[in-house]
Amino acid sequence: MGMRMAPLLMMLACSSTPKLTPDTTAPPTSGVTWTDVAPTLASACTRCHSDQGTASFRPFTHYADTAPYAPLMAEKASRRAMPPFGPQLSDWCPTDFHWASDVRLTDGEVALLQAWSDDGAAEGRGAPEPLNVPTDVPVFTGTNMTLTAAEWTTNPNIADQTICFILDPGLTEAGWLEGVNVVPGNLTVVHHAGVRMDYTGEAEALANDEGWYDCTGGSGVAMEYLGTYAPGSGPSEVPEGAATLIFPNTKLVLSVHYHSIPNNPVVDQTSLQLRWAEAPPERLALLMHWPNPPTLPLSAILRPGEDDPDGEPKLLIPADVAHHTETLAVQGPGTPDERYEIYQISSHMHLVGQSSRIWAEHPDGTIQCLGDLPNWDFNYQQIYRYQSDALPVVPGGSTFWIECVYDNTLGNEPLARSLAERGFTEPIDVSYGSGSFDEMCMFMLGIVKVQDP
Ligand code: HEC
Image (cartoon, rainbow, N blue to C red):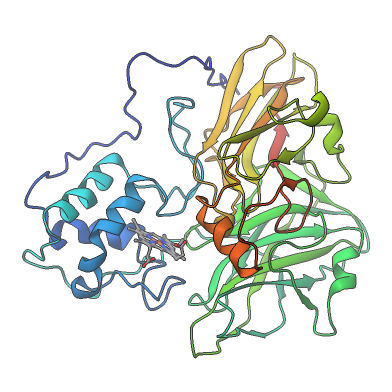
């Protein structure tokens, strides 16, 4: 009944350094062996880094295969680049959000991996091998529709390929959706997946007779996300008592990013579980995407930036600029006496993107951070959901902000690789668009109005 207080914070740098990840275990700092790191690897890494997982090229289930990579593992773990997870605790956003399906390592676990590497990656007494591969993905209950994508065989000559499958829920009238859950057919090749809505039929028109089209590098159609999947991520659900309105005749687009296995074509058939509400819900879950038709055009929400030509706001990231920032601001729904819960966030950029920050500015000017995402990785786009018992609350009439930071130099490895593949030797000016060498600064919020007590 009682209304939760919004976790407020001012965007002022703290003079003391906050402890970023709360952790109760004091890790050993010397003499660390495989015996000590094995539990962390088994809980946080082997769901992907095993023969059954999407990083099967680099298994961490046996000591002998793993030890040579100890320095690289420590480096990726301390940069919070692995396991892949967007929002991180920071001085800018010290709110300790509870994220659903949080796969982040604690500071203690990072220190343990670092100490293991520093100590020469010894085996010690060893650990029972192979290490466990977790199957603790949260369960999705109440499925009342299952849609199965066409069978698809990976091409061993193409390392990364994204296929968009058209799925038809057969909606003759509007439907109310409570949640979706992607069930990967073959975990060794399904890297991650997204579920979007095609209400215009534009995506469907691109598909072949089998119901799919190649959407590597972008879907080519602006569509709103309903959910995402990555190993360990769990289902995408809206808060209890709420549902998302889906218009009649809407098709769903399941985009599956495949990571192929060299010399070995692999067959996959991924499916999608859905849970529809039986009656219109008490609360409408709003998915707010900017910029994206049919919401506001970019020009209405883009704020002036540092490299704008002629002082006109423009999403333009000049070649050879290593740190370029764009900022967008959008007016949220409601009036200051109302309260809204935020149940999920995500950001979207392309190859030039580096990091993003999302926050709310209340009508009284208070700044409330919603997420600091310091490691943008085009390959791991996900929606991040707050745990249902700890949703941030904002007053109606708040303005939502996103800041995107870009690196348009050859020091940005994914960009350099992609430029080289297309025969470019130098970075090029990048502006707004949906192609791989265009950029975006897109954000998405899931919002639900708090009911009057
Ligand atoms: C959600 C799946 C997933 C999880 C969980 C995960 N990884 Fe990864 N990891 C990958 C994928 C896929 C790659 C290869 C592509 C890339 O670098 O993003 C990779 C690459 C790496 C690499 C580089 C390997 C190389 O030879 O280039 C290291 C090191 C690494 N991960 C360490 C870890 C550690 C340590 C953990 C656990 C603390 C972990 N990863 C958890 C998916 C995952």
